[in-house]
Image 1 (cartoon, one colour):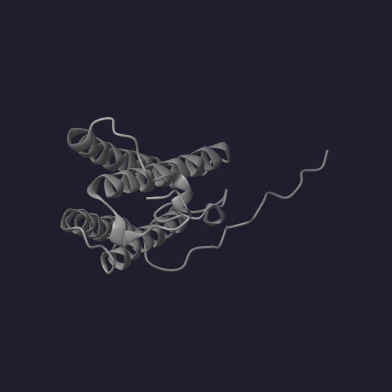
Image 2 (cartoon, one colour):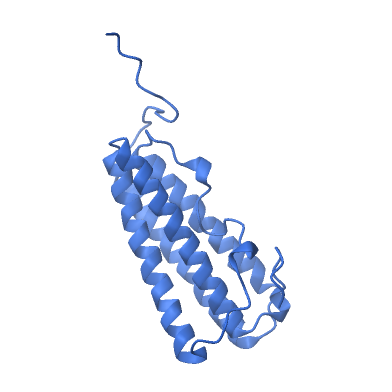
Amino acid sequence: MSTSHTIDFAALTLQDALDLGILIEEDARERYGEFVDQLEAHYTEEAAAFFRNMVRNEGKHRDWLTKRRTSLFGAAPSRVDASMLVEIEAPEFSEADIFMTLRQALDVALKAEVRAYRFFADALKHVRDPQVRELFTELRDEEVEHQQMVQREIDKLPPGPEPDTRGQADEPVGH
């Protein structure tokens, strides 16, 4: 498999698929970590706390995939790399705002989980290897569980609209 910007799903081996899954989880973990740093710096603690939880979740999933990959393939070199990813599960960087509310943070995460689900569902249409199909089916189904987890958090929020705080900065203070 070459390291182009596209993925030939029909040619994926189980090792490639595990490596791809690890990269996807790491990319999402890093992006959520960037959001945490940005939001904590601007005292947007509720949204930062949620994204901190997402960092932990993505890390756990990456660790699980890494253990599985190592147990099957040891230290064999990877044939996939980050250039093959185009924000599969990681939220787009532009989706975070320093003044975002918890609801907005949850919406960002939900969109990312739906995007990841679509990635695996679409990939399954082209995968030939039965072990890769099994892994991608498992990962697709986990994205449904992640969507449900985020939706449960959304459902806990008070009903009704909230103010749109995205892109708002404090007014300058006179001296």
